[in-house]
Amino acid sequence: MLQRLKALFGNASAKPSQMLDSDNIPQHIAIIMDGNGRWAKSRGLPRMAGHHSGMKTVKRITMAANRLGVKYLTLYAFSTENWKRPKAEVEFLMKLPQEFLSIELKDLMENNVQVRMMGYRGDLPSHTLQAVEEAVARTANNTGLVLNFALNYGSRKEMIEAVRSISQDVAEGNLDPSDIDESHMEAHLLSAGMPDPDLLIRTSGELRLSNFMLWQLAYSEMWFTDVYWPEFTEAHFHEAVREYQQRARRYGGV
Image 1 (cartoon, rainbow, N blue to C red):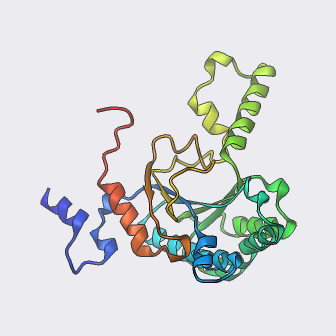
Image 2: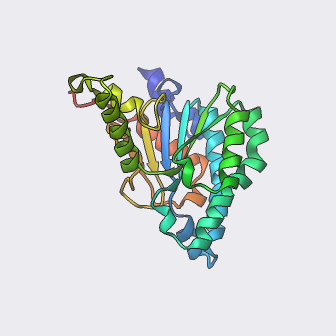
């Protein structure tokens, strides 16, 4: 017991990562990266500057998750609703994956990170899709952290498409309606093959899910912070994991 307490709380001179219980690291962490625009506005900068700074945080937190032994890191990069933003901002956001991956792909490879994408490819510009698919292909054999970008992703659309696909199976006589269970739904979601997130982090002080992984987050622990995404540090990340480790996950039980 004493050893476990030391692992959880550490001591005053310990590094934040040393204050965590290495036996209780979340397997899958999902992050709603929010506050780029407000961070920029607070500094008298254009919104695009906030998005560009937020891109640097992606690298920082990816490496932090990898060092902790997190298996899956899902980042909400662009939602199906984000197309409503001004055209210039959307065009800038669509260039960020290309810029990020051109700069960071070498390091991701060296750190055994596997890149995946969860979202709807049809609406993405060719340059965005090409950059992501190249990174997915080049890192496919890596066996470390899975860096999963939720890009042009919306959970309601995801669930509707899943129901349509299951309905088609029923209509074709390949599935009896009485046999439909959670496993059928999960197999038709964009996250198929990944465990549900253990921990959801949202930055910038907003307390909502914003159409993100609504099915998958049913039993996830949630951690919110007022810190804007460009200011989110490895120490904040460790703070979220430390809070997760102090919670009891009962899944409806006692």
